[in-house]
Length: 245
Image 1: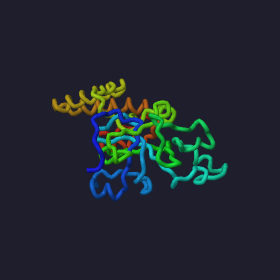
Image 2: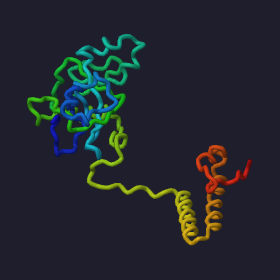
Image 3: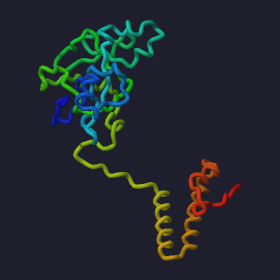
Image 4: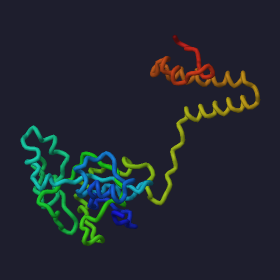
């Protein structure tokens, strides 16, 4: 199996290796990440979430060396500034040509292997943690990670865990918020309708239901055209005459 499972869920800021696509297909085809270009594989990635989601995934930013070239060789000229903007260099790469403050450092004063290495902050991707390998395969227990201040600068306070998944393995279950008052009222009306129908008083059920939807339409008619409203609730049992044609 690819990868190395760790019990420590504080994974944020770690650098791991994303194997080549064909290697993943050979060993774990069901875990192949979606949404990635072929050239994203066979590169390091930076983990930006602390733990695994309910499917065992982490959220990562992609890394590249541009074939070990300076970013100005990849995106030269002033008109390419927007293309250069999302890339953050990591030492020993020189500072960003447009924003010198964009220079990341590794923990323990380490340096990336290549002369030029960049983190692309533009988009994050969900990847199954088990397919990720140590950055240094000869020492799987050796963890390479960004220095804390560098990681904070890069992420800029973004909560990637909320972007990535609603149910993280944090050891506690979040209680869903109560429904808004209008939803509660609609639920109560529906319960009354159900009870009336069970009791065989169909006419009463129709009256209650018509009243509920008429009140709803009165509140929403300025925002929802009647034709759209009628198409959403099509059927004689659900149809309400337009109160304001």
